[in-house]
Length: 117
Image (cartoon, rainbow, N blue to C red; front, side):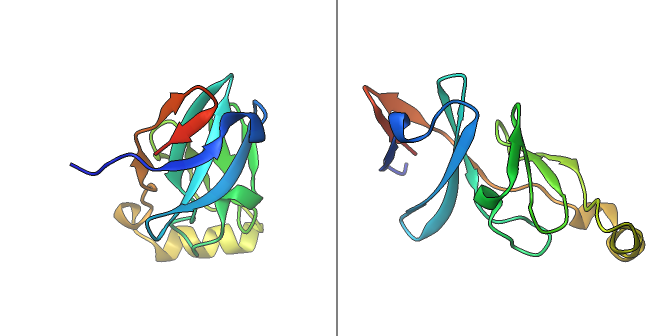
């Protein structure tokens, strides 16, 4: 079983925001949702854009590149590419459903102000 790695201080991530970190060679997005830490892969499964550059609403992070949305609680896909409209149509026609995959989700632990993934 892998050991937890300290990746950030919770106080560095205000509630409702995210931070991109690296741990053991992986790019990870850490989100603070009402004082609780969540961790998922920091790369969109569409074109690998950094998700920490996106907008967080509730537990859903939107990729800044083309609008794909993922739930930071479990890495699941909430919606696929949404903009621009012509690009969404192209992606819907090109990518079968099984390629519209989620992102990795990692267990987290908070000890004091330290966030571990």
